[in-house]
Length: 324
Length: 297
Image (cartoon, rainbow over all chains, first blue to last red; front, top):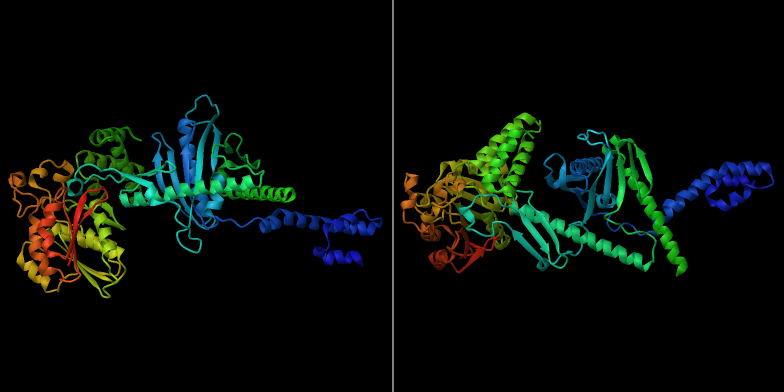
């Protein structure tokens, strides 16, 4: 019997055919079609939303990139510094849960608690691809401990995520920076040096002349490791710039509809009185802010963002295919 | 933060300037976090306060923290042994790049005179491949030799052979015992090179804490340190001694010697040592100053 085959060879039957059978004059056929429809429909949805984009959209070129995550306190004074530190903790926990290496490269504390800024080094497969969703302004709304009137304050912290290309392996790329373009400033440039001096002046500043990008590193007591770190950060900044330029070019060619990343965009709100975290890019709200800050659920947001991105890319592809 | 800590912080800011003081306090804090994971906040505060006070009184940060990064190593530092300087680290790196280890096809021997903490030979052990070098460090100070041995213990020798012994490079008996071991492929030395008239002007943290025998380029130094300033030394005494002893210690073919010197001493050092070598160069440090003499036999 024909409908028996539908059950058995479900995958061979097109969704359209089953859909047509839903209005078959025979009630028996209709009820069997109704039984089969949901499974097929969800399969179609999965195929369209996940399998097809994965096939059509080229794989990530940044899969093996690791990430330098820079967190800066924004508006809101003490509150903002405290929140910046909470984000630092959130990312450290998230990275640890994913089994990634994670270390603080530099950190400047705020006098009254929290941090002014910090850079986190996150290494592991997919580290950049996951962390780059955190790029942008994060907004916190809550009653500060010091607020006597019980008013809710709004503060911000900004996150910038820079890619670090793998240093070994088949994806090894040409060095993004020409050493001739970089000026190195060190302290202790005047004076006798050597045995005459034992003050630790290990800070290093790199200035990339063509772009004006400046990196200052003073975290370590070793000038050599400050220098190595500064170069790593400079390369990451230049690579971020290059990736952004490439993405812009691609968008221009496709007269696309995907918005480019905007570093000043408010991407997420952490509302403590309402106990929720809302990501504005996908309109996703998660309850239980405390659990979120433990890093457990950041991945849910990243998955939603990735699905959304796939959908937009796909739409974009179709658009350019039909208009071509 | 407790108000007392804040107060001693201000003392250090007055002594070192704001940004240097705050940076050093950050290093102290991270050291405290490192060695008591217990996070005994009260105890840590008290220690921080005493560290800041010691620093304000002029003690070098490296003696307070007890260590100094040097290349890939963390060198133990303790009064009065000379604290490793970043300029030294730079020429050791340069030496390791300029000496072709692979061309030898056998173990290469290194003699480091005036070894101090042992930082130079130990760094060479670590930046060169395993089992390719044999290093020997010599110092006149018993404190230095004991500390160099601790540094060997702490950092290991990366599968290379390393040893330290006490000896005076002005003593011919030391030379006799060294020559019994055969000649060395490389000789390194960061001898004391500060002229006595400059010694008086050094900062407290150098003059009052580090061994004058590791700083002042004269030999022997008066027992009474206050008389150091009276001697007429140009800081070059060790280089003429090195010129006397290098021929008996360094292989006469494909050997290399690298010797650190002080500001403005390059041409004098070149004059004293040039004739011993087939080729010689003066190397600049990372701050653009001439810092080391390199000679090839």
